[in-house]
Amino acid sequence: MSNAYDAMWEKLNLDLEAHEGLLGVLGQFYGDIYMSQQGRLKGMEYMDFVLSEVHGLRIKELQDAKASGRKVIGTFCVFVPEELVLAAGGIQVGLCAGAEIGKTEAEKVLPRNTCALIKSFVGFKLARLCPYIESCDLIVGETTCDGKKKAYEIFADYAPLYVMEVPQMKTASDRALWKSEVLRYKEKVEEITGNKITAAGLKDAIHLVNERRRVLQRLNRLRAAVPSPISGRDALLINQISFYDDPVRFTTKIGELCNELEERVKSGTGVAPEGTVRLMLSGCPMAVPNWKLPYIVESSGAIIVGEESCIGTRNTRDLTEEAGGTVDEMLEALADRYMKIDCACFTPNTERLENIVEMARGLNVKGVIHYGLSFCQPYLMEAYKVEKALNKAGIPMLSIETDYSMEDVEQLKTRVEAFVEMTR
Image 1 (tube, one colour):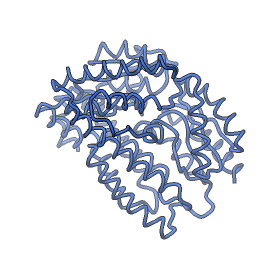
Image 2 (cartoon, rainbow, N blue to C red):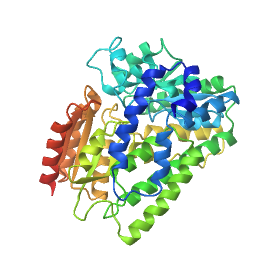
Image 3 (cartoon, rainbow, N blue to C red):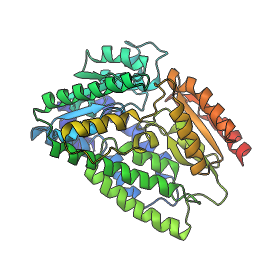
Image 4 (cartoon, rainbow, N blue to C red):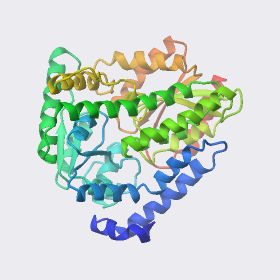
């Protein structure tokens, strides 16, 4: 791939030698974790292709779109309303934050005890390794944790940055603040793109993003079947790719994959032997290529049938109301929809506790693994309340705290294997 895209990457000011090393490691990692699976769906061939071209063809598509006058806006969080970007003729992409490559550069400006996700996106920028960051006309941050808030102040020295303020509670005044932030962001998107958001454009954008959420909701419903027709690793990969693939193409491809899944469900075909322990993941987001924990779990005699995370149901559970006819009505609907997100930044956060228990029961899981990135205070602290709610419902939970390194793999595997055995 490097021969075909070197000129493009050089133009984006990537460190070509380090970038080539990153792609080599990523390819081997992907092969070990994904291509080694048995009984994969034919529809996963598209996901394999997307990952093989993750820094190639998709980046070329973004560059071609920029050449035609479109703007690219990068984000790190599900709170940023993609509908506004699409309505203004722009493209929104999720940004690299799932590997510890660039950690050395990040720790020159960040404390060592900063969560891996924050160090990752700062490291990718400072080490010049992420073509998505370099393709962006604007990068949008959000105040979902103190670490991000302060890291954005540093990140702004190196990239064009805009920050949305996310309320920390869900009172009427918080809802009013969030609506004002949505309006402020709409104005910023119009300024960057040079396009006015119209009622027709916003209506189409809301429908488009809802259609992608609907197809992922369909995927989640099919995963609930016994036996499970798709591995947790593959389902996670699909959700990860949804953040940066073309939304129309992605929705079509996942619709085709769901058709294949339905045939499996009808025939009773599963990807794991009968009696395999069904588990659910909960907690912090897992950005590409953060596949460590799912691989450990599914190599330990269990299968993951759901993810309560931003790279999972927190991103897809709620649709935006499509009945509005005016821009203001649709902005109200967007504000309402995004305020339903049950991020651990909120206090109190009883919605998340209720959603986790309901999801675990609906998926008929034997247990929940709560995943927290080291130094991620919101999710690590909320794990206490999550475990309390799950125990009350009679569902065991294992709390895992880790980062992106591979140093603790054997230790984690021992703990996960013991948990799986306990839940049989």
